[in-house]
Image 1 (spheres, one colour):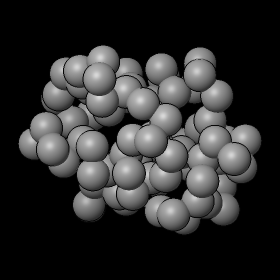
Image 2 (cartoon, helix red, strand yellow; image 1 turned 90 degrees about the vertical axis):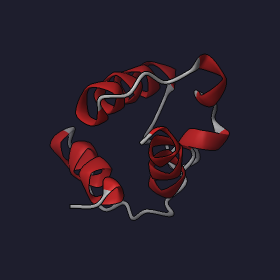
Image 3 (cartoon, one colour; image 1 turned 30 degrees about the horizontal axis):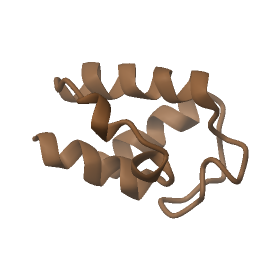
Image 4 (cartoon, helix red, strand yellow; image 1 turned 60 degrees about the vertical axis):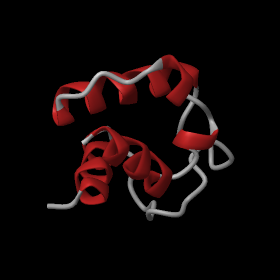
Length: 75
């Protein structure tokens, strides 16, 4: 399973269906600041990484593709 697929599966587990890797998560109302923190906690645990504060930005969390690219820089 790819990084993108694992992240999409997390969103589905949280009841967020019908998004694709390029869906704008903020404009679509899928992610708010509280849920963004939950995503960070998931990513750190799932991928065994420790994200730096400078990488936790709206730009890096705008789409599943951007989230996956950010995670893959740590792997």
